[in-house]
Amino acid sequence: MKTLALVVITCLTVCHVTGELLTVLKRLHSSDALNFLTPEEQVMLVELIAAAEVCRLHAYERGQDRDAILALTAHLPDTEEGLVRAYLENHLRLEERGLCIPNSGSAKPTTQRHR
Image (cartoon, rainbow, N blue to C red):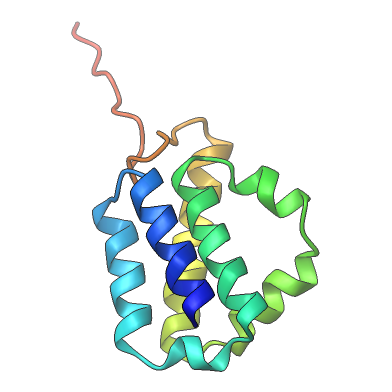
């Protein structure tokens, strides 16, 4: 658990903390969800969130065993599993569309065309 705390603190000091990131982390820490994960899975979860925050989730995923990522989410209780999956899927979609802004937790602003 000390390792996880250190990784989270490092992530939060390096990354610009967003509302979305804070929501996910607060929800996980306020539940016993992390107790369902091995120490390795706890670290992987923080790495996944950090990769999402810097728009490198696809790159991180390519370097990992996809089954390990799926197992990690499957080990979480239903509510937290849904929250984490939605968070990761949202960031993957933003990356695919080129709308991800590193460390912002949100999409690139769209410009409106004036006619």
